[in-house]
Image (tube, rainbow, N blue to C red; front, side, top):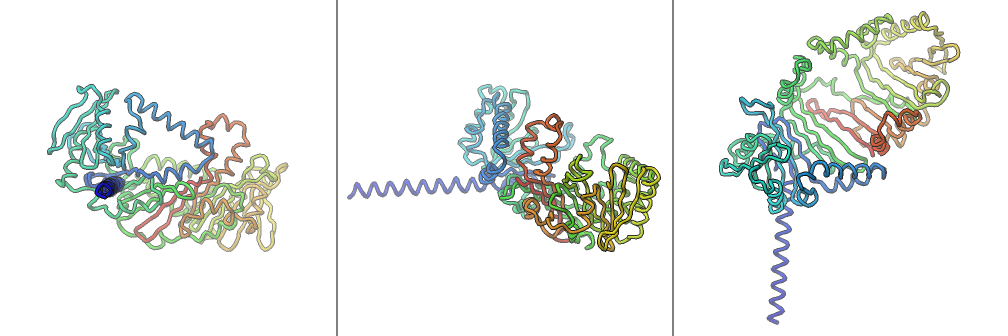
Length: 536
């Protein structure tokens, strides 16, 4: 009985110790996988920080997507990357790094006053899940040649300056459960001061932002820009003189307070979401969502489209910015000159009346005139100034008749009037008409003209492709970008030269993508949310 009790007691003690050890390492793993905790080592002055999450669930889900060829290509590229970057250092990712690696935060912090090189320093904060394995890695990193390692003390912490085989030097220090690494010693010293509470950390005033991580599932990476105007200023100062931002552009950037972006993996594919906070609220009319009703006009064969509102407002903003930007002014002058050649004033007769919703689409078709190209185009513009639009259309008709050998014909399709441009030997190649009192449609290719005139039975918005690519994005938005990659690749592959122009590796990746969807919306007058889905 005594022996039995001893064995039972010993087993219980071992079990309790194992559970305690498991819970300890689990808590450490959770701690070093949090951007908020990593930010406690980063100085408040950081202008941007990117956190890479050690999310195995995201990697597992990502591996479920793609064609077999794409998965094989990614595995091969991963192996080649390790061979090229780690072979010379005698470091094995799976054995030397992965067992102890937690989350990794890359932060850009302003350079020290009088610093001769880059105006911004890079600081890497690496979470340590297992200190023993991390110490083994550091030992292996510095190797047998101690002459390449210089040790010194700062605030009671050992900083190692290591020079690798290529002559590059970097500084590293272990701070509790984190490894701080930077090319410049001052960046590591700032991290030590922050870790010891002698200076304010990034986490102090950005707690909510760091915790939310933009709200994507199975996060792979998060990007934080706590002070957007400072971020732009720091990098703009280092741009070549011919690439400097204009004062008007910098003024627009100053209206942005902060930004957080998250990249994650869910059942639909890879999702990027960015949340931008403004300094002051926008007028309500600038944050109103579009109705999206004009998308009902597009057929299921639509392979790409972009929709939104207020082309006239966007043009006016470009005109304002161009006053202090010579390159942009030259571009706008070129656009104006191009329209002047056909007798149109681009400011008053083209963009001025495009003040409502719009949609521009590329549609696959092998009928009629489109049989040779395999694709045509369709556009819908809503306007509050129909008379101005009709003046522009009349001028275009006169130009086509005078210079292009085109016959302009009017016809009725039900209750709607249709204007067609025709050429001998080709037939109708262009047309337009009014869908209602304020919605103008324009079509390239006769088959598409007739499709857009009526709401198709087999419409895009009810299709499987639309649901897979845009269905999970916010319904209340300011417009979409949509690309059905599968339809697009069918069209691309009809041309023999594609196999020469597009590398096989790129084509393999494109074939594994279902499509791309992007939209933007406003949750309030201060908060813009942009979301992009790479449907796989």
